Image (tube, rainbow, N blue to C red; front, side, top):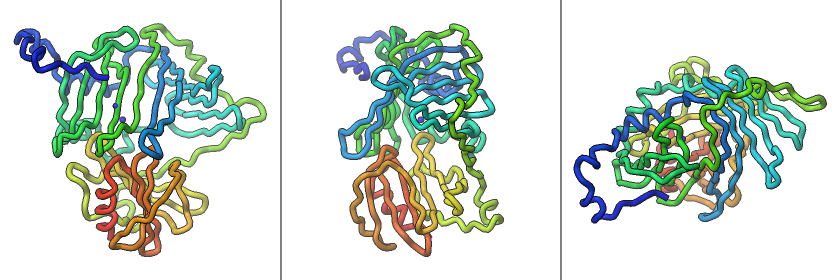
Length: 338
């Protein structure tokens, strides 16, 4: 949703004008990289997420198969190459299988149409909030790439680095950074076979005998006026950081209770606000909590893989803010919630 080949000043000024003009338009390359791939592929890649204390990282190795337009098979691999988790999407159903627990989750694949932003509106917001520069990128799995660097227009902070395959527009490597400049997560292909037809039986899944199948509850996406009509009183922050707007609201079942999830986006980054009944707890992978003084009461802050986390109680609700922004930004948002 982050090395990068830096040209020295001398090298930059020595590039002839004709060569400098040979770079494609950065936004055109970015737009193409966000589209679904047009070719089937088989790949291995690594995904790294920074969570907890700064410098602490969790790395996973994945095997991925894809067949256009919407067939996916993803396997999280263990140290010996064993399958720790299998995810299969056939365009209509997403299956998640945990072999160790012999448990299967069945649900619908994520649908971008559930968002209140259409693809064009989201892209316009992205390009309005971020400067996108293009340069020659390192080779990834032996393939030539363009390097896209995204910086926030508000303060110039580095947000993303993207290595895009020049021929297929496939994203081969990414790096994401938090607002304080620290690395948040990274993805990189280590092996890629592009264009070879896929065996479509690999994208079919039947729960193994003896496994437990759980039907995953799907969120109910609503607009603000729909939520009010359904008897839900949204509690939104009156203040948002520059460039962010309300994107969507969904209601998730948590046992017999409902949790309201608000999303605020600037085109790349997302800040989530959860409005929960007091005793409902969310699993965010957070470890240590510390007290945070708020004008609306006592809060608790921590760091999770998703970013900074701030929680507090007010008006009979428990609120949790999560995002790759500073704790001060989350505090200001929290104190503006009605």
